[in-house]
Length: 340
Image 1: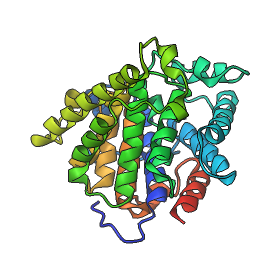
Image 2: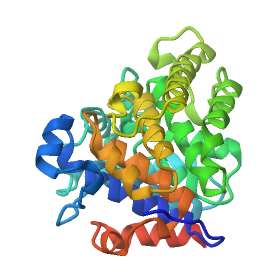
Image 3: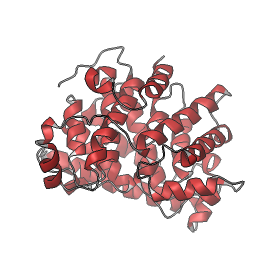
Image 4: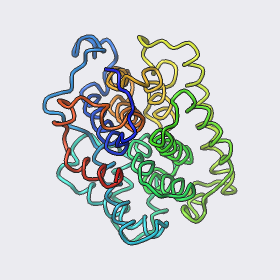
């Protein structure tokens, strides 16, 4: 399925729908190696969306973040204080929800349990964790219209830091939101890695004090600049691996072999970019490639779907798939708000 972009592409609806579809496609294949997936699902280019199309905590937390952002912006200009409270409340509600039964990540569960108290959020943040739970859910930050660069970067890093306080989790979330934003605005996929690397270099020692407070002290670094630079350096290395892999693309090879399994934030970003850029105008094929990997296939599918949907819009996805995805009405509600 090759999709052509239109001027009214509905990038937010496309990204959120794609995110959930990739999540659902990768849900049954997570923790499986490629031979096992092929034995269970058949040829990877023909993988079918499961029936019913259930999603994981990846989509649930994306919706929680999206609702938190919506609440914050209903109250006025997006600021750290205005964002942190509703997103924190949404994450705690997700933690207690009976639907939170999709093998959620340990870091998210630990941090959300600690957030369900009167302590400062910096004290709940798991500063040793750079799991992909930080950036699997960040796409809404790249889709909300009208944000300044400082607001977008700050919101992306703050939402990550509420649970995952490792600097690489913050930098990877910032880059993921940036990639979604650029694609939604019409950036060409083939120039995307170069733009992200430039962005990472420009921000490599910029600590967003207004948004993060004294988080760096909780991580044990000697300065805020040294803290945040650790994260950007790891992300730059990961982006370089994507660039190297795409010099000699090998669509039939598991992308995880060159850009990582995706359990940690910088690898999740890198391998999702890898899958998307192998098939920038074949969104369903990109999702199938992400789902048929040895790594964190639901999160890889989730991020790949967000990138492809931001690039191509709502027309990227087969109607038969998008109409039966779990949480469809919630996804469409946020998408319509931000596309408007």
